[in-house]
Length: 374
Image: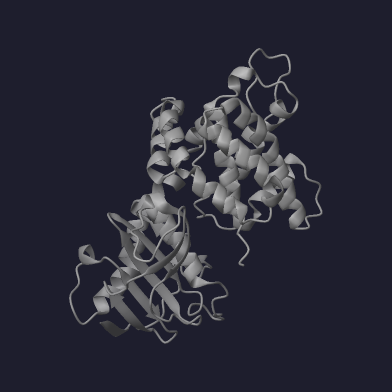
């Protein structure tokens, strides 16, 4: 059931620095934080979330909170739901599903929205505590009710909550260290959306342990072969893929038959061609340089810091790994767009790893580009 409580006055937020009486102070009135943030997260919960619990007509121990939603008006009165919210997440999934199909983290490509099942007007404050297993998240926005000139929310709350939910659900993906990113890139790997979450976690775990992620290549190839039919079918429905689909079909067919030389030779030049087609379809004025192609490729998601496709990192991956430069006098030149196109990549590098990564790059691009509705 919902409880109506009186907080006395509306919360304004948290101070970002100490101040003496009469001094100005900066106030944080909207924020997302989670168990990942440790003591900082606890301090946030122990202020306004605890204040809300204390106002309830029943005793609720903080340790019993699975979810807490407070919808707060400017007069300080609030409607509070304790362990009542049944959220519904709108997720992008990696395979076709019928109604009633069970969804796991292995199926999730990204989380778009989180609906809480109750109307939250744009002119009220909101505090939402949620749990996913042992992990918890806290989102609050007191902007519409705090301060001398409060204004209604100007953003889509469900979309922002979806990002917060995604961060908590895939916390380990968003907490990859800079050092581990360098190791991943050096090994040419990325947390590709075309891989199951279990496989992504395994690759990252190998990097964190200082092991070679290529040791998981057998498993990656086996998993990829299971998914190839669904991938190519999805690509056929996207207009940016149409000029290239025959080449991709042949590359996939060669991969399935373990002809990794042909697959690699076909797919690497076509990745740039695919990006150029997408670039042109958007009417982008900037010339299609590697940097511009990478930026445009991820542009649809770049404002979402909690996007599971990791747009900022993938743009960098495209520039530093796919578009990597090469030393023409080196003895063993790695596969990249430039080395393949210039005919200098070593034959030994046209292997199943290069072929697998090429396919995964293509599928990652597909996930960045929304398929037009028929």
